[in-house]
Image 1 (tube, each protein chain N blue to C red):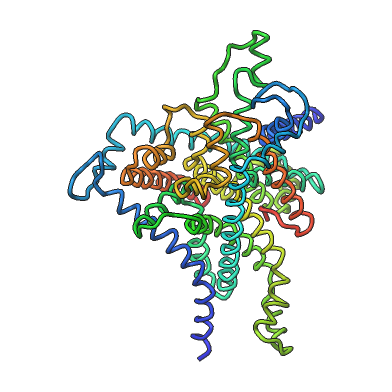
Image 2: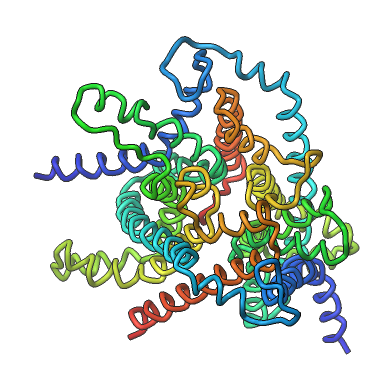
Length: 281
Length: 261
């Protein structure tokens, strides 16, 4: 008699959040999934089909956008995760007040958000700006013209993603029991041996989750490529915005969105499988 | 040799922090520059750009829209997360893993896709977004963050206290109000604050859902950026940076809560 009653209470408690996710996320995703097969101004057919996807992966131009999106996200992750790993390792040695400050110094950029990040790079990167201005004036370098290039996009992405990577890896590294290091010291292990046999293998789950987080942030970033990238250098996110705001083509926007989700799922799945082998050989 | 290594470590950390925080601090400094352009060479210290924001109705109105959307969506997200957290701790392990994955799923959907999906979903019913649509999309976006902070509160929560309270003759409501809420208060406040700020500064999830009347602050700021870069933007950005820093410090000091645990 008692069990069903408790289940009702539990269901009622879970109902609001599950409703929120199903109605406000699940159903809308189904809607754009269906919309991605619909005819549109580019394909005025009277049937549904895969033509929108065919168009996006078939032409050189759109394929270039797909490749650029992947390249930014992958290169961004390859720069961010190692930089973050070393930072998180060094932060393990900081203690007390300084450690608190160090963590807080990484939390507030996440809260301040990408708007401030973009403004910062817009001010710092111009040829006459505070970084390159003096160097150009002194004749040491040619004007680098970084604004509107993938380098500018990457710089801002790495800056924005680093706190996420460092905080994830910091937590993961801190969970490694200290006994292991003491035992290895007693057995006369060198610093390199400690790293290769304790730190690295035990932190792999953290490396995996930070890689996934950083890759997802990079692949789905809109502000960096839109405001710091070149007008011709679109990514899937800016393409979606163009289909909605400029050419008013909802089915193409939906197809680009599904394509973005598909390549993210594919890469995350691939990275997850590869790491799964490493973690549990 | 030792000293060189130690110095190298500090140099590395300083470089990383300079890279992460430096551009933001530069924006804050630039907001005090009296030059009429941004970016520009240093010309003199002034607070006139902060005054200018207050007299600029486009910014102030957008700030109110953002604050309202952030307020309502964060309250709904934290309330739903609180109930869900309560329900999850009555579930067995397998169930709660599935539940937390489902409820955290909004974080995996690119924000711009969330905006697009909401736009087309609403269009199906022939309604335009308005404030309600904005609140809806911001609530979904906030839910995973709220859930994360609420769950970290529940993980330290002792349910036998509720039984003790019931044994002492307290009703359900009294127990909730006098036992459950005070114990989880810190996490609920922290969850609300994080959700509020993340919603307030977010641009992509609102991108397709606003009109002239409901434009949020980030959208108005960036519309400005595309028209002309004026020094009011660093002033708005500095206010956001200061708010983020103050929040982080207050939460750490008084509630002992961080994003990492």
